[in-house]
Image (cartoon, rainbow over all chains, first blue to last red):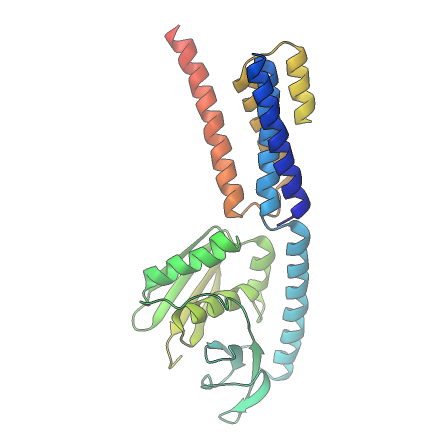
Length: 228
Length: 70
């Protein structure tokens, strides 16, 4: 939210309402027309002020870029660039990159599991998100749409299909250009967001089985369950 | 820009409220298409665009209807 823009919009709407009332009282349609024009401008300011603002989005993207570059360098040194990505829902929630099975729990940072190194990043996202009562493709789709499309506005649409067992395929479209750029890199913030959100919603571990770019978006195959 | 247009229309003696509204909606969509704001995927902005487009369509439909029934 941009407070300045919201205030400007609210004041413009208020002034236009007063002008419209005056126009109606004095039976001047032209004045009412001008008031409606000002009202539209005020309404647009108000809506844009309440949306996420460009500078903040720019800062987030800059932060993501630094995080992705730093993490990629670490993964390169650990030879984990083509490793598995999983989210361990046990508190504290972590995203783990490993070449072996995902550990049952992991400390943030570097560690070893089954004699192989892993790299884990603690995540504190979607902490207030409540767990779904029933885990189905429809319920996951609806909840992910609420978070990623309606709340964060990161993409235009999302679809989840059950793929048998505990596999779920997530199709996205209209992904913002800045995020879709990362889908070709090992550390893809959007993939992590979807995996973390799914782990929060289901309360279970999530393994990213497959990740591929499709026109206008990303296709993810997730395994949801304690044996992820 | 929009206020300049509105004042010009007022000085020209335009008294139809829908004319002011439709011109302003057009100006908004032209500005939107040219600038492509970063918040374009926001749900609220999408609702605003749909609302303004519907309003514009209604105004045009009403004017066309008026011409046809005359």
